[in-house]
Length: 205
Image 1 (cartoon, helix red, strand yellow):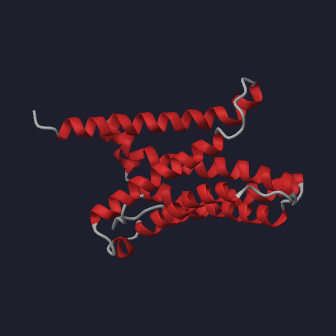
Image 2 (cartoon, rainbow, N blue to C red):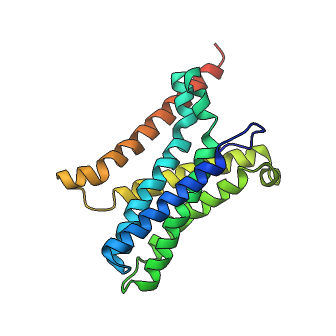
Image 3 (cartoon, rainbow, N blue to C red):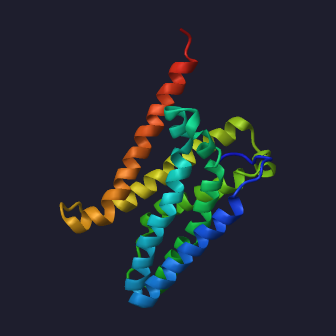
């Protein structure tokens, strides 16, 4: 998530859209499968995929611009907007998690809550630090380190979530998880490629 820019942005509309769609997804899941565990788990799965699309754009936009050049710089300039839209969409997912712990007879264990709870913490810490007034509390170096660690941890949490079920070579598994696992791997590859390219460009000849 990048620092604030003085230019006009689409942050507000994107955040509202991301949250509204996530809310509709959750509501539809609970309406179709009931407000119990089945409906809640469906809502969790679908809302995670929706919010991940926004996260993936924030996670990889700058890297794509580095790899493919100036034509993608306008997309990279919206990294902060993508990130804040992800944070807005993920509020619905967090609400469903809280609801699951209220109704589930055997809710996920403490280790699961701690692992994904750290990802939630980073999500909203990075959202906070995307505003200059809050980022100014820390040094630019500290903000950069927190950003890097935070986005990589969130990416790891999504990876753990999407590969959680036992891997199965079935059409259903491929439809449910294949696209998102592919996006995760593509995100890692493009960020690593961008890192290598930047290092090569800044290294002395």
